[in-house]
Image 1 (cartoon, helix red, strand yellow):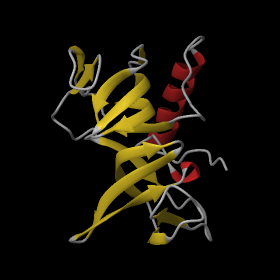
Image 2 (image 1 turned 180 degrees about the vertical axis):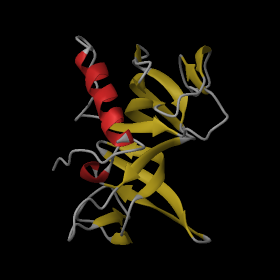
Image 3 (image 1 turned 90 degrees about the vertical axis):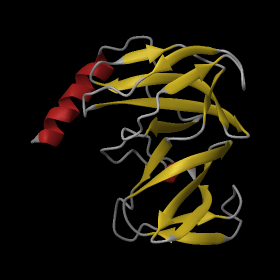
Image 4 (image 1 turned 120 degrees about the vertical axis):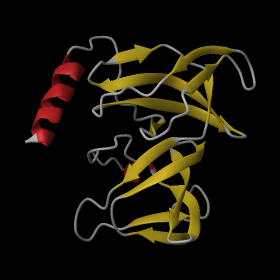
Length: 180
């Protein structure tokens, strides 16, 4: 029932957006860690001036999502940042920067027989270095085109590698459509 209510909230919120693009198929998207006590600082340039500070919303059904244009040495250049789904707001910070820590994607093995792999390079022709076998939240540390370099822990072991676009989900509570 809670999922249905959340779905309705998202549907009404997304329907109300006339000029705002919610899903980007040309950028890696990520959501900000809801558990983080650190606000998101929006900078005008790498190591530049802070132009805004965004704090995590108290609502458990609200979070920040970014579309990432590029990454550079611990920074993400963003297309936009949005607060979703309740208390929706689109922040127009195209070509601004955020520090890359605290941004996540969810990886979900959404159907039987589907395999999600991490690769050593941002290419499906590179070596498969790790298989993700269930739902996993991963930190994005870098992007290359539509690939996300991610890291997470499995027990005491740290794993990092490149995740293809079709296996990235920028929502903390649901699966995403799969694109090839």
